[in-house]
Image 1: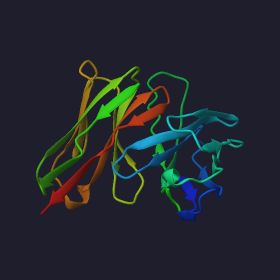
Image 2: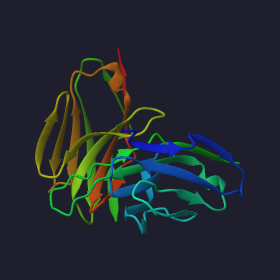
Image 3: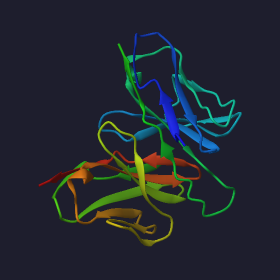
Image 4: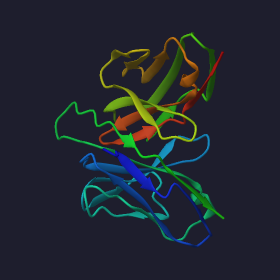
Length: 117
Length: 108
């Protein structure tokens, strides 16, 4: 099991460029998440998905888009990169059963460091 | 909305015990997680509390009081490798809201 994988590990973008951050998991988890983490700040939820074809906004969705066409993959798209999007991006996944008391621990990928200049 | 507070930094000595506190105010509560994050790495799961009381896992324990909106992470027999950031996160349905994290520095 590779767990949660993310590519690329590091990327430099120019203002206005676009890119897709890739995330994949092989744990058959139904829930997936995208976070960003800025220095001295906690993780902020960007988007999440409870299953293929279903996505929802988190706390800081502006400037990003997501899709979930398969259970395994959850790419994050930046359309017009801005310096404010310089951050470390983490993808996470969890397994949710529709029963009470389910812990739903989130497991994180290694992160993508993005610099927008 | 949700508000989660943790101390920004703490220092401790190798072999000692340290307690990292987390207070929260939330419109819904389905559990509280603690994660450890070493510099430049991903967060890794440490503990989960959903009911009041203490959960013990080796050198690490976590406590929850839902009525007080309060949790703590207790680390015993500190080792140098415990130097890391410790993140408190409140679960509401299937999403987590994280605190800013507490940077713990363990010195010899």
